[in-house]
Structure formats: structure tokens, C-alpha cells
Amino acid sequence: MKSLVITNMSMDTDFTSDWQPFSLQSIPGVRKQANATSIIIQWFNAEGEMNGDVEIHGTNDLNNIHFSRIYPLETDSGSGSLTIILFPVYEFIRIKYLKNGITGGVLNASINYE
Image 1 (cartoon, rainbow, N blue to C red):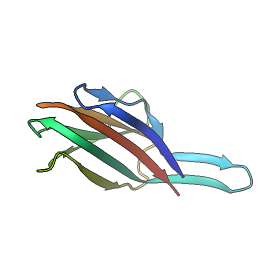
Image 2: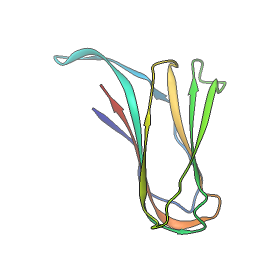
Image 3: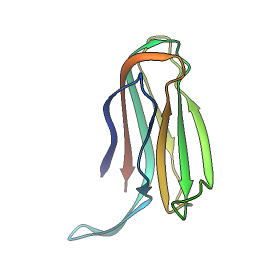
Image 4: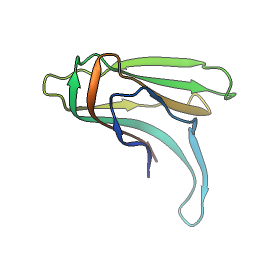
């Protein structure tokens, strides 16, 4: 199952998603629980200096960031993708995008649950 977190967002603006649950509880008739397994980041037609970043944050209490990892968006063509493999350590995760020198383009991000 895929949860869209960022859909066709302009890359000229910084963005922080809401906290997303790491585990989805009971899906009637399908399974009892699904855990986040990966985050897919895709960008298209990026313009400007390609030095933007995506940060992944993890927390257990929704108040403090207990984990933070920065992934640079690097490409020569202005388009690219990044797959981040997740392990069930935290209760919630969120995605933060920092444009830095990027002036345009389109950004998508999704969380895959299995």
C-alpha cells in the first residue's frame, strides 16, 4: 500500500509533512498491521542550483525528533529519484524538503507500507 505524502509540489518552496504513522493498524479483510518499508522521493525538471535536501525524521512522542537523516537531491539532468529503506524503530516519521538553491521543478514523495 502506498501513502502519498507530497504530490506534484513545486520545488521552489521548503516543506515539512505532517507526522505519518510508521504502522497502520487493522485493515479489515486484508491484514492486521502494515509497516512502513520505504520512502520514494521523485523530482522532475528541477531548476537552479541542485543542492536541495530531503530530511527524514523519526519520533515516538510527536514532540521531539529522535532521528534525523539528510539525503541530498543530486542529479545532472534535473530529474531523479531516491529510495530510502526503513526499519520499524519509531512510531512516526515525516519528510522535510529544503530547496536551498533549487528554483523550480516538481517533487513527489510516498511511503510504502507492507
